[in-house]
Each structure stands twice: as C-alpha cells, then as structure tokens.
Image 1 (cartoon, rainbow, N blue to C red):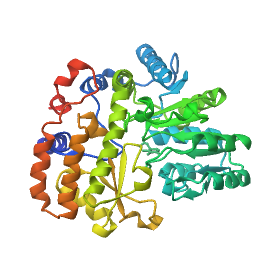
Image 2 (image 1 turned 90 degrees about the horizontal axis):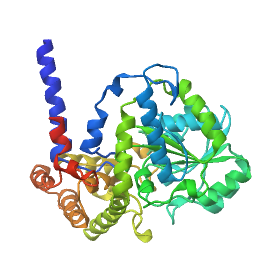
Image 3 (image 1 turned 180 degrees about the vertical axis):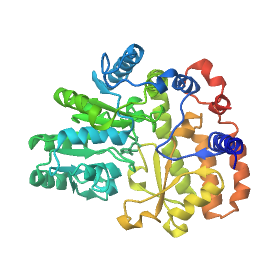
Image 4 (image 1 turned 135 degrees about the vertical axis):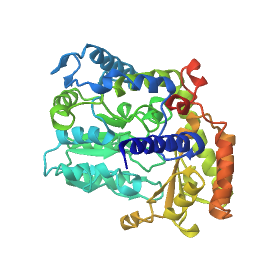
Length: 428
Ligand SMILES: *Cc1c(COP(=O)(O)O)cnc(C)c1O
C-alpha cells in the first residue's frame, strides 16, 4: 500500500473506534471511563511534547515553569480532598505507582503479604507481575468465602509468621471494602507498612462513597486516574508517611519514569476540580446503579455474586455465567451486540480458568457518567437477559442497544457549559 492509502486507512480505523465505543456501544469495562470535553481539551496541549525530569521547581530541565505550577496545584487539590499534603503524580500508570512504592518498601528477597486473588488482587501484586519482577516474595492472606473478603483472623497468623515489609489491600475484582484498619494494625505491629491500591475505587473514595484508606491506617495509597476517577490514563500516589513520601519522590525518577506524560497533569487537575464539585453525586449514583443492576439481573434469573451481602458496594457487578455458556462466550455475545464487558475469574474459580473463567465483570462508572440512573439499569439488565438467557440474535439486540445509547452521549458531572458537546464531536 502507498503512504496515502495507509494514512486513509489509519484515519478510518480511528474514526470507526470513536463512533463504535464513544457512539454506539454501552461500555461497561470496570477499569475504564471517559474524560469530560473540557479535560480533553486541556489534554491536547504543548505539554505533551515536553520533559520535566525531577520534582516540581527542582527539575533537571529548563522550560518547566508552567508544568511546575500546574503539578503543584494538582497535588494540592487532590491532596486536600484525600486529607494529605503528600501526593505524587509522576507515575504514568497505577502499575508504575505500585512499582515505585513496592521497590522502596522492600529489597529483593523480602516478603509482602497481599489480599488473595479471590479477594480481587491485581496481577501487579503477585509473583507473575510487578511484585515478582522486583524479586519480592508473595505471601497470600487467607480468604473468607462467606464475606468475600480477606479473612481477618487468619491474616493475623500469616502476618505474625511472615513479618512482611508491607501488606497490599485493594483490588481489581472486588465488591466490598477490604479490612484496612485491622490489617494496618497487624502489619504495623511487625514494623511493616500498609499499601492500599485504590486503582479501581479512587473516584469512589474521592466522592466519599468508599472508605478513604488513608483515614483508616494505610500508610500509602496508589491509584489510577482513569477508572472510577474519570481523568486521563495515569497513576498517582498519596501518602500519610512522610519518610516514605520523600524516599519514593527521589526514586520515581530515575528508577521508573523519565517523562511523566506532562499533558495528563492539567487534564487530571480539571477532572479533580469537576470531582470536587460533582464527585459525591457521581460516586453515589455509581454505587446505586451497580446495586440496582445486580438486583435487576438477579430478578431475571442471573446468578449474581454476593447476594447475601447485598451484591455490591462498588462500581462492579460480578455475574456467574458458567451454566449459561461461560465467561468467554458471554463476553463475546455481549460484544456482538455492542455491550462491552470483560470475562473474569470469579472467587470460586481455580487460577487456571483464566482463558475461560466462570464469570463476567460489569462496571457502571462510565454509563453513570453519561447520565444513566436506576431506570436505565433495568433496561440494561433486560438487554443482558435477551442475549444470554433468552438467546436472541445479537444483531437484533444490537439495534436496540444503539438506539438506547443515543440518549446518553454527553458527559454529566462536568462543568456546566461543557455538557453541550460530546467527546465524539470533539474528536471529529
Ligand atoms: C488497573 C489496576 C492497576 C493498574 O493500573 P494501570 O494504571 O493500568 O497500570 C493496579 N492495581 C489495580 C488493583 C488495578 O485494578
């Protein structure tokens, strides 16, 4: 192909993606969200071409006066909401935020205790991910299946025996808050630290719909800025422990990050300002929506995980679909009808079931941001029912999905005048 044809096909693929995922599809991947048009405009700036190694006002580069100012402002605005003055924005992802914290807290060969995979641990907490890459040993805390959580009594024994350098709570697939106070007290007793990985629930914490781990004994919180917190893709660390803040600040660069994707800083700041204004309303609506979606799915015959505990307190709903055809089949069938979720290991699955796990994970944070409320959760549950239980043709259901989505194109919970345009329009 000639360059011109290639170019046309690149542009056309990008436009296809935009009109599919921003236009026609119902996006329910639990780790995603969309930025507001204003944040997106702020994202497109000269900052995306620049470097600023080092801490604000102590950079190794010239030309950084404006990013210095904005980075400090962002740290202040986010810190104020979380109750700390110590915030790091330079990790470009949640995984790198974890890497920086883990590496400072432990040397290769040291041990860390983590929430077990059944309680939602992310791969970066395990020997297969960042923890393993750093040579830190993974010791699992025991799992309490009845409460779908870390087993607090069993944890005491493991922590006293292991005497870990740190414990990690928080996860990727979890419905209920982990026992931060209890585990913090135990690791502190053996001289360790508690890391809370808030990648998924950072927006819920920011909007006060989920307990703030820094107020409950965690020494440090890592996060992604693009899951329930609807900013640009990026990472963040908030500290309660000052020596740790200083040590991590000195090592992010040069250990893990050289350029920190500067253009995401003003976009994150605008998102934070929007969240200061509308975050509580947004976060509480997310949780109400996931509860409602869970109830409506259960009412239509789905096996929704966590029934005895009220299904969910987060943005996630987990549905067991082994008896219907398995997680891989369910996720593909939904995708054929333009509903995007991911297949997921359920707490009852063995780890080797990862290619065809028993369940799907559904997130309500993005549809909530587009203005959906409890009534729309009923509509979505019915679409799931038609596809996965009644087994209507995906092509037929897709028409209804696309029609339904037309009314939910604009980002709510953002600065007023900005709600008039869609992100899709802005990208045209
Ligand atoms: C998504 C996730 C991460 C990784 O975040 P990225 O920003 O994608 O690197 C880390 N921890 C948990 C618990 C997550 O769910």
